[in-house]
Amino acid sequence: MFKNQYLKILLLSVIVIGTASTTVTRYGYRIEEVLPHNISAYTQGFFFHNGFFYESTGQYGFSMIAQVDIESGRVLKSHALDRNYFGEGACMLNGLIYQLTWTEKTCFIYDAETFNLLGTRRYNRQGWGLTTDGKDLIMSDGSATLYYLDPNTMMDKHSVKVTLEGREVENLNELEYIEGEIWANIYLSDEIVRIDPSSGKVTGVINLRGILPASLRKPSTDVLNGIAYDPHIKSIWITGKYWPRVYKISLK
Image (tube, helix red, strand yellow):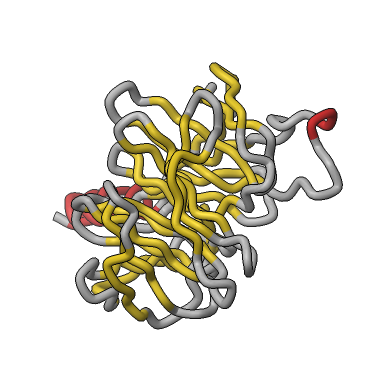
């Protein structure tokens, strides 16, 4: 009897330990295609929809939301923010574009077809990255926390702490929801993390060091920031702030 109880306890311990730990896969990348990018765009939000890129840019006096031609990088239509607002992350949900601002705690909401401004909503913190799982908006604020927001009110529904092998991952920035995972740029780094939305645990780290060659870098060139995904052909594009290129990548 004692032996059986001991074995049950031992087995339970193994199950608990195995559940608590998450295997983290480290990835490199392959460049599949190179596209032009507007070098004057301080990229804050970046996503794909129906054959176009959509991009939210930052900096006071230069912030906008834009629909971008993929092949040429040309802005097809846009809506500029007042110079008192610093644009941040953006995403599309149910025919609406949501665009965060940095410290102004204001979300701009547009009709995705016309780019007409439909209204604004307030939220409770700095705005950094924004994506959606098709139901809620998912927001970062530069900390290790992701916030799930009601798209109708921008009020918090719940949040999740992001950890990598037990350590909190700070500086979560631009976000993209890809096949049931949240991918996040880590600000001031060349890494993207893949996050389990339910637990917040990082399941993969993508090292994109060197993807923009030194020959294309200028004094104004800023950090990696921008992840876009086409769910139909499963293409992943990445770019950065003031980068001259968008890169279609695969993982290795």
